[in-house]
Every structure is written in structure tokens, then in C-alpha cells.
Image 1 (spheres, rainbow, N blue to C red):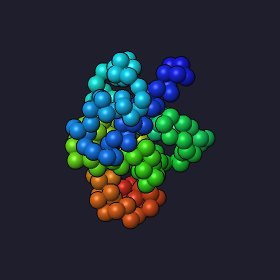
Image 2 (image 1 turned 90 degrees about the vertical axis):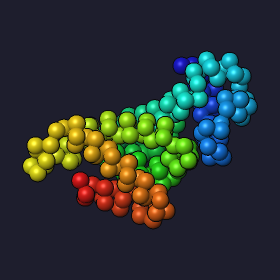
Image 3 (image 1 turned 120 degrees about the vertical axis):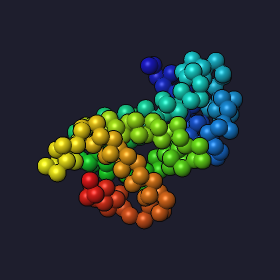
Amino acid sequence: MDRRQKKTRDAIFRAFIYLLSQKDFEHITVGNITDLADVGRATFYAHFETKDFLLKELCAELFCHIFDSMGKTNGHTHIFECDAPDSVFLHLFLHLQKNDNNILELLSCRNNGLFLEYFKKNLLKLAEDQLHLFESPKNKSVPRDFLVNHVASTFTETVRWWLDNGKKESPETITEYFLAVL
């Protein structure tokens, strides 16, 4: 992707994220996005087939950032810039706490089912990659795919609980809680 295409794509992402902070996903139109991003409809459709596809791509970009940071100690960037901590789960909580790119609006909007679907789908990949943290003699007989699903589901519910309770715990503390119960 050349620089101009990236700039256009970023403008569309920023406009979409802003709109998500203002109204429900179902009430956002492609026209709203193109007006705010200052791009034409044809340009939007050259990058994204639909607004659902835009949401999918936004989620992919959010998670690509996390996955690219796994095992790296230096800074990295996609739509975020940061120094990644050793724990990918802590990394996610830190971004949630900072509300980077209004990610909390994505998680808490009334019709967030599509985002949560992508969130969990990517968490399944993350849980699979991090499964060594959760394997123990106690769960040796548990099927691997069940354990992966359990870790991803528990993380999703931990995030939901943390957000519903006003993020009172630090990212470090909530990460400790999450790891302690698994």
C-alpha cells in the first residue's frame, strides 16, 4: 500500500472510530464516514466493501498490532504506537485503559456483537499462542480446543467486568486476576 492509500485508509478509520464514539454502529452510514473522512464514496468502496467490512478491517488492524508485538521488546506501530510489555494480556489491558482509538466505544456500544465476535475470534488465536501459560497437570485431559475457548471466553468476560466496574483495577492488577483464575 502506498503512502497516499495508507493516509486515506487512516482517515476512514479515524472517521469511523469517531462516529462509533457518537452513535451506534447501526446508525452510521457510509455517507457519514466519507463526509467526515473527506473522501468520496468510490474511494471508500475502493478500500472497503461495506461498513461491516470496515469494522472487520479495523478489528484486524487492532489485533494485528497485538500479535505483531508478541515476543518483541521494542516499540511497534500500526494504528497504535507503544512499547509492548512482556504479557500480551497486559498489553491488551493497557490499550483498553488508555482507550486507544476509542476502542472502549467499540466494546461498549449497544450493538457491539460484530466487534465482540471479531474480538473473541482474535482472542482464540491469542489464547492458542499463549496456551503454555494455562496448561497444568490438572487440565491435561481437557481437549486443547476447549481450553483455548475457555481462555478466550474468560478474557472477554474479564474485560467486560473490568469495564463495567469502571476500570478501578490497574491493567497489571486485572491481568494478575485473569491469570490467577485460570
